[in-house]
Image 1 (tube, helix red, strand yellow):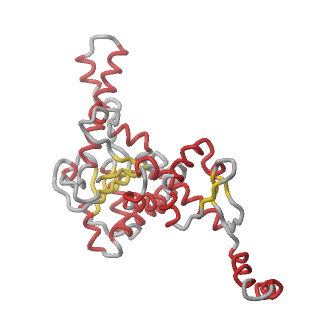
Image 2: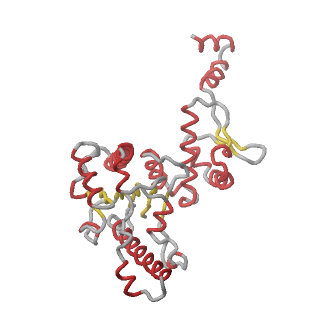
Image 3: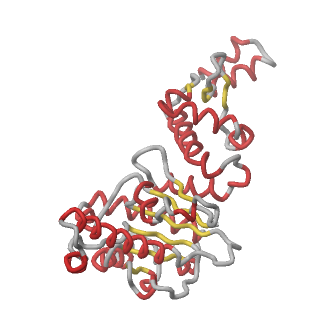
Length: 312
């Protein structure tokens, strides 16, 4: 199965002029490469990086040369409409895509002006249709390089600088073949939070890999991602009080509760404690480690002694 992992922010070539953007992309690329190579540099040849254009590819190749990202073979750093994205067989099953394909606004003006006969509005409609069709074609062509035609292995496509809405547009998810049953819709995984990091991408990856234990993977993974992130956040803050899911998911609380209720066994395996509330809601339960230790010691000696031990 193939999965598309989406970002929470949109980038273009000009975004690379900001050091903060470069640093973020370098960190995420490094996290993804390290996870899939498992510390073996020879496995990096199975990772393909596709950039918006040749100028962006030069940035990435320089990062690689300067040691700012792992040593992915230079030949595996390419761009839309290159030889590697036009049907050539590519080894590996991991692809990192930096931004979507870009078609200049004026690319089809000449064709529109020749063929249009209904005035400005119709010309604009034709122009949009040509550009949209071209971008969809380029994205699907490029993102299909690491897919296994036999479907025997998983493929991972990380869409950096592209939100879920953009990826859905590039994959043309509203196409009739996905709704009439003639084709399976693509698996698109996105975070419910902003500021997606490399850790978030890897969390999504691990949940995708463990999808057989998740009730409805396509629907529930985003909620499990946010649950895991919230659990880590409140633990790091030393929280000892139960945190309602309504505080974490806000207007998506009902959907979150449904996802949690259907995956309680899996969530328990993750080490997350879920408490059902009297009002029908749910919360993440935390316990103070000192309190647990006091209870343990109190079972074999007096409480005063246990408090004294903890204070030492």
